[in-house]
Length: 290
Length: 241
Image 1 (cartoon, each protein chain N blue to C red):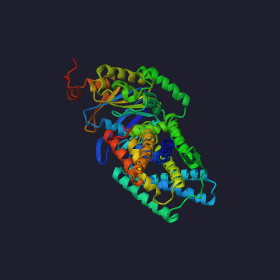
Image 2: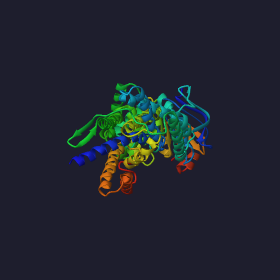
Image 3: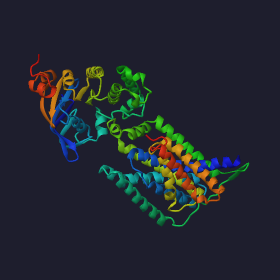
Image 4: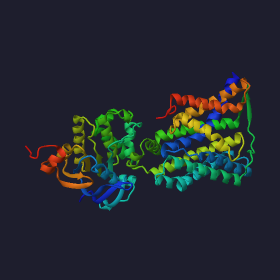
C-alpha cells in the first residue's frame, strides 16, 4: 500500500515538472505554430537566476521563484521580438523557425555556462522531510505539486473567464479571423510567450532544488517534456495536464518494474517513450489533439 | 458622403497582382454589390481593404480617413466589419464566445451585453444554440453567426464575401432579408457575390469585376437589364421579357 502511494506521489512530482515546463511549449505552439526548442534553456535560466538570489539570501526561495518567473518571461519576450518576430514577418516556415530556436538555445546555454558554472551546483537549502507511515515526503515536493496544480487551475479559469484567454483560444483556432475581430495578434502572442516561459522558469527552480543545477539541465528534461506535449496533443493545454501525469506515472511504474527485474533504472525514459509511441499509434494527434 | 471609398486600388499576393486599379464607393444605408466571374478579384478586393492582402498602390478611405496601410485589427476597430467566405467562425468555441469575440476590442461591457441580446433578437436561430459549439451549426446558421460576430463590433460598414455560396435557396433568401434589415439600421454593406442575379436584385448599386478590373457599374436594377451583362454573366437572353 505504502509502495503504491509512494509510486503515485513520485508520479505527481515528475508530472508536475513536465506540466509547468510544457505549458509554454504547448501554448506558444498553439499560436505561433512551431516548437520552440529554446524552452530548454528557459527552464535552466530559471534555475540559475534563483540560485544567484539564494546565494545572497538563502531564505528567499519564494522570491527566487518570482524572480525566475519574471526573468524567463522577459527573456522569452525579448527573444520573440529580436529573433522570431522578424522571421515570422518574413513568412519563415516551420523549419527555419525551429532551427533558429535551437540556435538561440545554444547561445543562451553557453552564455549561462560562462556566467554561472559548467559544473553541478546545488541550492543551499534544506527541506523538511516527513515520514507518513513509511511514505517519504519533503516540503519541496508538496510545494511543487501545489504550485503546478494551482497554475493549471488558474490557467483554466484564465482561458474560460477572461477576454485575453478567449482571444488566445480564438487565435489558436483561426488567426486570420482573430485579426479581423479586432484582436492585436502580436500583443496576445507576446503575452503567451511571457506567461509560458515564466512557468518554465518556475519548473527550472523546482528541478534545480530537487536535483542539481547545470547548463544542460533544461535540455535533459526537454525530451520528456516534449513527449508530454505531443502525447497530450500539441497545442492542447488540457491534453498536456493529462499527459504530464500519465507520463510521470509511466516513468515511475517503469522504475519499479526495472528494479524488480534487476535492470538499471536508466531505462525508465525508454519505458515512458514506449507509452508515448503506443498512444500515438492509436491516436496520432495525441490524447486531446484536434 | 460615402463611408468607404477605394481609389485605383491595386491588390495581390506576394508579387502577383490580382486587382488592377478598382475604385468603388459605399454609402451609409446602402447595399453595394460586387459581382463577376470566378477569379475576377472580388474576394481579393475585400481582403485588400481589410489589410489581409498586399496593397501595391491606390488608396482606401474610411470616413475621410486614409486607412490604406493600417493593419487588419486597427481597420476592424475603426468600424469595418468583415465576414470572410470560408473559415468565418471559431469552430471549437461556443456561439456566444464567437459573438463576444466580435466585440473583443470594445470597452463598454453593458453595451456589449445589450448588443449580444440584440443579435439574438435579429437571429433567433442563434439564440437557441448559444452554448453549442459553432462547428455543430448548419451552413446557414454558421453564416448568420459569422455576420452576427462582425456586427458585434458595431461597424459602420459591413464587408461580406459570398455569404450565399453553398446555401439552400431558402436559406439564401433568409440571409438577404437579414442584410436588408441591417441596411435599414444605417449600415453600409459591401456584398461580394457569385450569384449575380440575387445580388444585383437586392443591391442599391453594383460593380461588375472582370479579370481584376471594374468593367461596369450602375444601379442594381439597371445593371440587371443591361443586355451584355445579362448575356455574359447571367446566361439570360439579352432582352428583358
